[in-house]
Image (cartoon, rainbow, N blue to C red):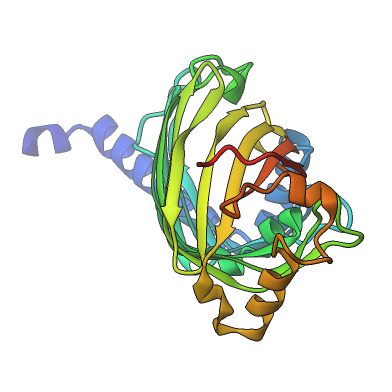
Length: 314
């Protein structure tokens, strides 16, 4: 090494490489945050036209990627924005193959954490402790409050980049701990106005999906919660944009006597009592003798539609 250092060309090459590196590093470290934010917002506007009203409070280079602070955006006019406390996007290593990209994404939002690893067509995600009661855009889509902590994993193979999720294969294994629905108003055909639903505690719900060629089949749910018994099954047909995926779900629910612990719960039980004169005949026909009420959930994921049907739970 000492003899190599004596060579003039080696010294010149080393010095020039070092100072070039220092110069580039200084450019990165001193690049104005406002200019970086503007570049990112411009890039998102061109590459993801579905994303609207993007706001980024701060942006900086961090490691092999970018760190964004206090990010929010919507998908349409008048929607409640999705918010992230921090978002880091960067390379998964020092090498990068544009035909087989590998990168990581880490997001802190809604009291929890989401970590995503993308290696070519393979997408793996880890969800930890997301508080659904804070996810206001989701509640706005459903028109009903939701609670619980969401955790679990997602493993997907998106081998056709043009089709994206429409031809994906994989599994979703999530758990919603201490799940609840309400408060809110649930539009049920047959009632003159949306049904007022108080907060109803369910308990822990397993949310499993088996995905084959873009068809996600829900692992049947049968849960006996503290204030509500719940059964669900069905499919979700994935689209290029997940929010446009088509729902085809069957949901059956039956309140328990413990719902009487609150006045709002008593009011709901009185309305749903088969002997109540307030219960529309159409609803009564679709309610089982054991008190199960059946519904279908259809439409897009971003705008689900609810319709009553005869409950098949026995």
